[in-house]
Length: 402
Image (tube, rainbow, N blue to C red):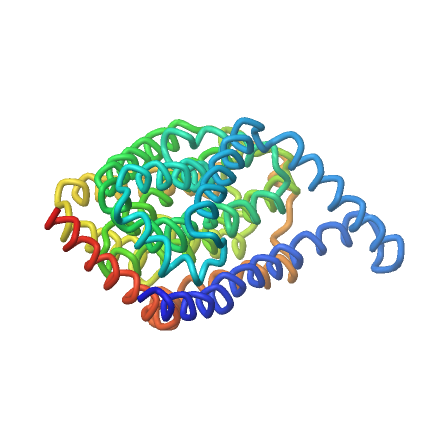
């Protein structure tokens, strides 16, 4: 049953997640390379040396100072214990073999399956991050350089949600069904709580970080809806949020490079001096809000529809998060890009250069393209989603009989 899914899912990994990695690496490389070349040296051996040393210095500082040790320890313990148990029971750690072996073994031991599911859940939930193990993310973004924030928001947060799809649902379907309501409650709390806390932030990076907590709540909620709309919406939201949040952090990095501040109170009127930058930033803000014709709308809309067919109350509460998202993102745009110029340094800044414009324009193009033609992405994971949902429906029928 799960062997076709395994083969199709490999295609999903190659074509979708590697595509995201290439997009963000390309966009970040253009932006960061342009900054260093312009500020430090001509494009020669000295410039390349500065690029290399500065990148690794920032990367080491980000890794050592921002990733909480308790999160690393919990993730490692949970995954290691679960893998050892699986190997003892199934005699293999080959994923393709486990898709057919492990569910049959755990079917006779529902309590063990639930414990195993919880071990995976703790590890993946911290990585997403889900409420209440989300507190490391805002601090990580504040301390990280622009490159670290782009990679963290664009790729690394999605690994936890991908873990649910890749491991939790097919390997432990009965436990996934049993804990689905629990995940719904945590997800909707993350959506509302993350949105409300984002409204209170004065640091741009912290605001975007808490918005990520809220948006990833839609992802986890859609994954555990166990229907095509919810799962398609969750995967689409992962891809969309990866582009949008990474682009927003690049925008913050551009502002910080020029003004050396991330505090919203110190900004205002940037659109007067940087109209091209304001236009592109507006696209990413609208996508984060979930405006139709942007990729953000497709992911959230499909997710809410999928959850509504399962739990109308949860879907209704989650819809409030969309409204709150519009509040904090539009308020951010108004205070940073519009209004009077209060900071005298803003009078001296210049609009984005060709390299910065090219990177942001490319990402804005993807946001609009996927918002108008969502099937460009959905066609790649539609068969995988159908395979997962079909398998879970069989497990759900068995669960209801019990």
